[in-house]
Amino acid sequence: MTAPAGPPSAAGPFVDLHAHSTASDGHLAPAAVVEAARAANLAALALTDHDTVAGVPEAQAAGARLGLRVVAGCELSAHLGENEIHLLALHLDNVDVIATELARFRDDRVARAERMVQLLGVHGVSVTMDDVLRESAGGAVGRPHVARAVVAAGAARDIREAFDRFLGDGRPAYVDKPRLDAKDAIALAHAAGGIAVWAHPKGEGKRDRVEPLVAAGLDGLEVQHPVHNAEDRARLQALADFFGLVTSGGSDWHGIPDHPRQLGIMQVPIEVLERQDARVAARRRAGADAARA
Image (cartoon, rainbow, N blue to C red; front, top):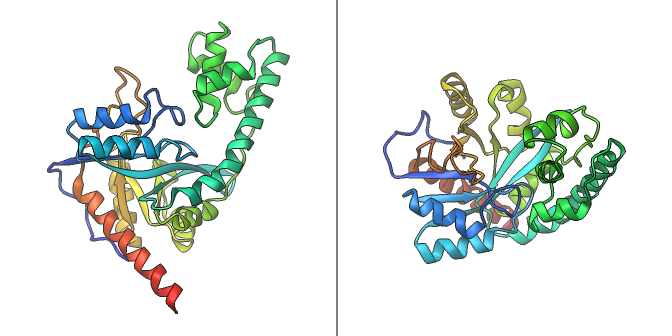
């Protein structure tokens, strides 16, 4: 399962394979995200909410209605050694498999948020768990929702200040996130019928870091992302070519009005999606052959 060498062409149509909805920390409902993608004239969209696939059915229903392909995905929080990385599980054809495992982590995330609320109280910030759950709107609970509750309580001017004062790494109300090993996250993506792509690796995306993930079955690298400069993109593309990986790209859109990261900003050619489709098909054929052996 090798990818054709070299970067894709810059010609359209374009796709966006990294976007978030209210199922996690986005600002728009899944159907509204799809509508925005259609309005942006994208050929396809991947919904990749943090540690949840809850928004996928709504998004795919909207895609069917609007004639837009919606790739079932999820952005998994995982650990590579002591460092947290994110892996995009894309092209999932059995979301129930991944949903079951993620439900356990979701419960752990709620417990983590409860502990953050307790620590905020110790430091004089009056926020309740109901406030946090209200901010999450039924989606996977994370630090951004706690931060929004802190802002709503008047204890910080904005989310950045909430992180700087209370919730950032090493700050008074910081609590470690439940850990999923990167190798297990890759296996989870495969178990759900999909592929695993290292999201926005930037400086971490070096040969000695990528190699053990490739050995564990990593399928691709997210080359096109707003945090990557031209040097990052060239280095990551070279790594993808060296290891025979597919590439991916997207805006990491969260539906924030007037934010620089708007849907389609990376102009990811549909050729990138087609290469992923070929990788998915090859992996599924290999799985079927192994099952018959």
